[in-house]
Length: 252
Image (tube, rainbow, N blue to C red; front, side, top):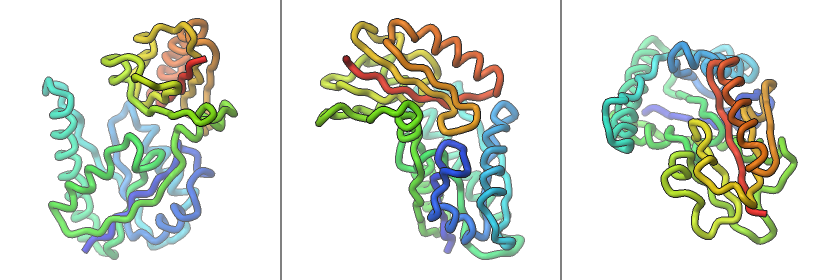
């Protein structure tokens, strides 16, 4: 029986790994680090950096494995993602069996950006792996990009007694401002989904690489800062080869 730990590691800063997360990393026999291609090599490097900072158990092995890429030829987005998740689950199983066959105990860990519960598919993939091999699942919560964004800008997530809607860039482009919302947090935006909105009366707080050394922030009335955000985003992506950003928009 494999014991699989999904460990939330925050946004890339080793200081944001919780003591519970560190304990789970050091309890693992094997930590698997996915490689997502040369253009995202820094992401694997960040995971390895976190491992070097947090893992003190000499018995814990750290191994990398290649992730399959999502097939752009499948026209339906949900089908495309489901097929990709199936392929990732197969690769997880292959990596677990290959590395544990060479010795060591059955405790395996994967490091998850932010928290495994929020706009992350690791739990769905783990469920698929559980259909392929016997395992027990443990989830270690992590600091989310939403928390880091609000902390970086020193703002509350919600207005007094008001709700918050968490959505995606794709949903914002397709459906516009969510009905009844006063504050929205937008994740997984490929860039500029806020241009689908009428900017009048909207304030935005944007951040990329939040909580990391290369953190960059912008805030202000959406109509005034949206062009600057897009230009800053493009520059940062070109400089680092990848970008993770998030933003909060509130009606004023």
